[in-house]
Length: 396
Image 1: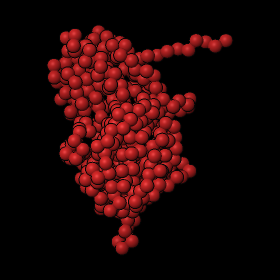
Image 2 (image 1 turned 90 degrees about the vertical axis):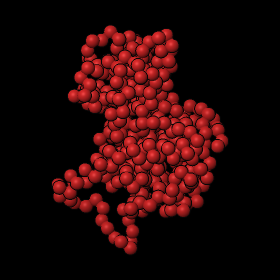
Image 3 (image 1 turned 60 degrees about the horizontal axis):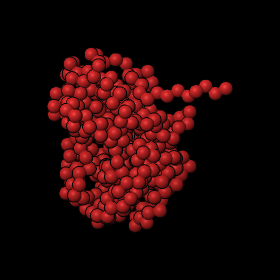
Image 4 (image 1 turned 180 degrees about the vertical axis):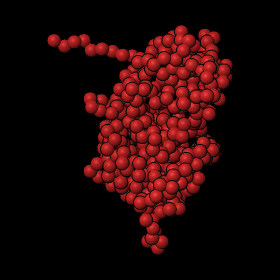
């Protein structure tokens, strides 16, 4: 399996392309594309890929990019796209449709701050605004994790027990434009891992049907219940896909949550994406000095792995959630979900939110140390704490 020095965008484009090519013995592949910084390199890679049976459709907007992917998926093709920030906002209507149609579309999103004011740096607010839609969501820390998770996403989304679209996210520039050594799997291995897609409810002119028509309230409830039951099956199916990935590619794509030193920790940091890299180094240093501190990296956000997180926090009394996102008037999104998961189960657990790296600000080891210092002195949780705030000098 060749190792190359590539960016996160290159890794994502490669994964989407070889996954699409793996369906050449099925009904082929399709991708609707529209550029937006810092995602553009992904669709540029896909557009140049020599698909045996596939079509890349450049369109006039992100809304149409997802529309193309929806139409192709309904025809039984392996479908995918990529976007970011306000592009996702423009795509929202069709993102919702793809989920409720139960289409196994895979989308790579490069997390970028929503504007205005316009900002092209990392912030998870763009994908987290989609948190209530029937999509699976995964947040990646490294280029290799982007590639591996994207491949796994196709197998998971297309499993008959799931059949839900999947979003794979990475931090803008920190991952998308930074080169690291990444193992690029051969097409032969990807073919072994991804069987041809057989979408059970694809459109077929020999058996005409209507999708998305008007229904009664009780039918909507039944539809939503089906989605909820599929979400409940995701963790088990994910582990099956993960084990198959290890068998084929010889490396672990990563568990839904990944822990360090949580077995005896009295304080635990919870992080996602590249913040987890910095937090891990801090935790390793402080544990070497004898401090009982741990780290939980959340990879899977939807469905939210609340049970697994609380199990990893058994010995802890204090939790610091480092959120690179902000929901107006309430705080960080990961913090909100973790508090909800703990409600009525761990009333003794202090869970404090720290808003870090909002709008792409640097999250340094020193800042993480400041978070730990604040957490250590607390006897109760308070309002979300804004970290790393800088003010600009007044311009005369």
